Length: 291
Image (cartoon, rainbow, N blue to C red):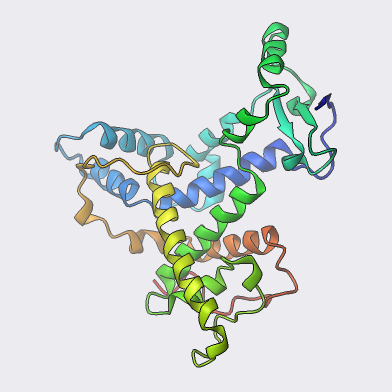
């Protein structure tokens, strides 16, 4: 295995700013999906004196940090409280593999210096290299948004908006529209006939996939409400102690839903390389306005 020092990022790699902005937009959407976050906003507005447990306090701290994600679109939010998500962009070097850079031999490692500068003392930099090379196991445990992780996260964002928009629509149609199964993209039309018995297996698989992705989306959004993103660990069984029955999440999501739904679809099309295999416009019309 070789470790390669690079001073110019390859053209195939996203800039650090684009990467941070994309991660911030994912986080913004998952906060919007979280019932806990919506409950925390209501709790803050009402100034309730109800006792809050440890997890509830974490949610309220996240609410105070990122404010109301329902009344501001992404562009407004990222210039205000959302700027906190961009604070992670620093001059600290990081080690990357070819799985993220898409260049070089699969065994190569790269040290990336953001904007060509280094904020880490030389001894600490050498210690980081010694601790990481040649083992790559620590990279796999990193919460970095790899292309595969981003693809699934954006799929779940798009699927969540579809479920909210079309609550009466069969799940397999929503799964096909959200392009949840790569090999079905372009083969299974969301508006196809149910009587097509030859696609019965595909429909049943899409239903199971939708259920699984729906659970993942809720799980990730609830962790996002504690400022942990992306995280798929099992949720705590602790009671939240926020006024959950008062939350009307569907009404909250109606704000900016069309914009975020269309953006999520474009991300899914790009990350799954589905351009040319599916319709340029959604099969299910009027995204984001049927709440």
